[in-house]
Amino acid sequence: MHYLLPIFKWFDGSWLGLLIADSNWLFPAIEAVHIVALALLFGAILALNLRLLGLVFTHKPVAQLARELAAWIFCSLIIILSTGFLLFSSEAMKSYSSAPFQVKMVLLFAAIIFHYTVFNRVTKNEDAKAGAAFGKVAAVVSILLWLGVGVAGRGIGFL
Image 1: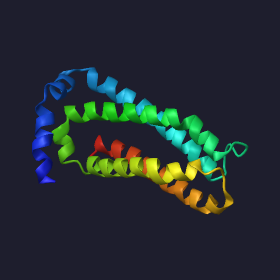
Image 2: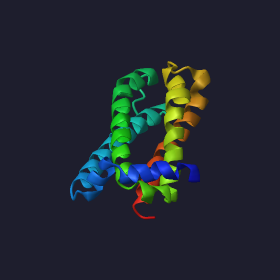
Image 3: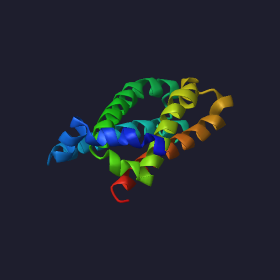
Image 4: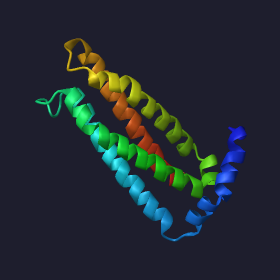
């Protein structure tokens, strides 16, 4: 990870990072938007996963619910990534040595890749019985990945 140190140092000293770090209100305001977007993302993904598990919205096909929630998931993810970038730029060197930050980045990357590949394929399937078991496994993996992102993110402030 030492090869990334110059990038972290650059972000830490950038005008944007310094602007946010030196402000009394910018970091908390950005973090508030970040957390609200995370709640929206996790709520939409949890609803979809609970549907895959057959626990909620059983009257609605998975594919239909996935289409209805797709914009919420995508927009909240864009907001999370944008605000996360801003938060990172204000404390890049703290993030460099933070194990929770590193775990969060790995889980975030894995969650996004999983969501837009495996999970998308499972949720586009119109409730085929053959894919029901795989759908349940995908739902559990998805919940664990996204929950891990949130827990690791919360750990950044403590460790």
